[in-house]
Amino acid sequence: METTFTTATALKKGSYVMIENEPCVVKSIETSKTGNHGHAKVRIEAIGLIDGQKRIIIKPGHENVAVPIIEKRRAQVLNVNEQARQASIMDLESYETLSAEIDEEVKGQIQEGKQVEYWIIVGKRIIKRAL
Image (cartoon, rainbow, N blue to C red; front, side, top):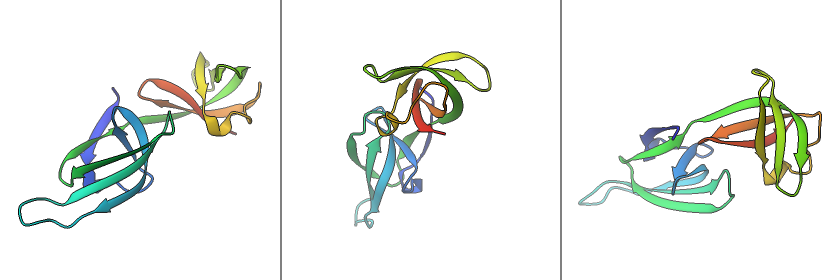
């Protein structure tokens, strides 16, 4: 899995984190004070990048959390399958023909011949933006 690690206190709003083996974007972070016997706790609230589900975890501030490595690329749409939320795309750098999932937020904007930005997240290709 393409991830790196950072401490829970180093995360900021808008950064990415793996929760329950799903890549998520952090929506809010709350840090509690240290107690008599322990460490500061960090409450991380995030939204899944692939499934859109809200996830919340609470971890000690010094503990490492996985951060997904996200590769952003451009492509041209060759074919769109609305029912399967899939599109055939051609990468504009390598000219490979690939299949990618269409994100829920941009599904009405994807058309044949248009350029899009797709993300490679933990081995999955997802079209995130129409250009």
